[in-house]
Length: 125
Image 1 (cartoon, rainbow, N blue to C red):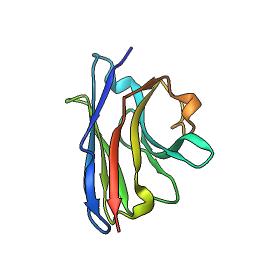
Image 2: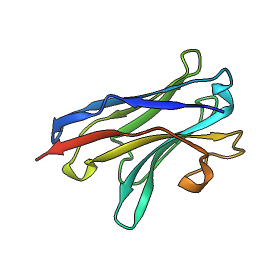
Image 3: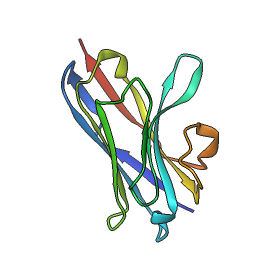
C-alpha cells in the first residue's frame, strides 16, 4: 500500500511555470507506475502524464505534450510534474496516482488504485 501527498500548486500567470511534487510513503515505491490526473468536462479524473516504475518510460496527454515533464526519484519516493508554458485551460486540481506493478503504463484513472488529495493549480490570463 502507498499513501500520496501532493504539493506545489498555486496561482501563476499564463506562460509561467509550476512544479508539482508528490511524496509517497512505503518501501515499495519503485514497484508503482505513477500518474498525474486532473478533472475535465465529463471526466472526474483525466489523464495528464505518467511515468513507469523505472522512470524510463513516460506518457503524456496530447494537450500537455511538449509543455509538461513527468519524472521520479525512487531514492526519495518522489514524483514530479514540471509544468511550463501554462495556459488558463490548465487550471484544475491535479492528482497524483499510483498503479501497482503495472505491466504497461496505464493512462486511465480506473487502472490506478491509490490517489492523493490533490493540489490546486490556477493559471490567470
